[in-house]
Length: 230
Image (tube, rainbow, N blue to C red; front, side, top):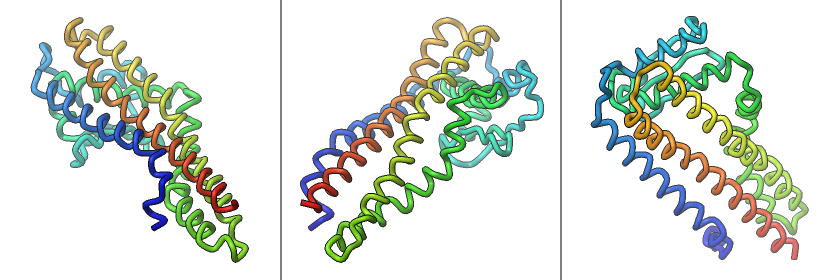
């Protein structure tokens, strides 16, 4: 019953935190998605003006069908917004649109943590798909001379942990840029900014949770490797 070994207790708190964080961001977004901004500008329009103010007229804005799948693609230089953000004038929509615009500004200004995160994407993708299979094979066949696969799997998974950690400053910095742009541009009033901050802070918790899950998963793998060797 390897899949239910006692080391799972290491990651349960992080998993519980991750589920709570996901529920919180969903609830917070839904709450302020029902509150319209006084100026009534759509998320796509606010994003366009913020980008243009930084001389980023070449960054395109597209609508995607994925719910809360908003993101900035630095390779294609495209800002992709969900329908809940693209065409909405809610406080939640403006906060998210400005946040994603913040990533485009980071890219344009050479923000180092973003560059590091972008370079780690292939490593994180590789780690997500190969780390655990390699580790499990090495764990099961350790007595057959394949225990080195456990170590290889752990080192590959370190890339996933590194990606999660470097994501934190990228996301928090984008939120700071977003709130500053919404304030100086007059898109939101003081009280509206408070609520937009709530949305962005809730979203940031999901990245904190991702770090917690990744770190505890790494700790669990190290514990399992040590027990297998013993």
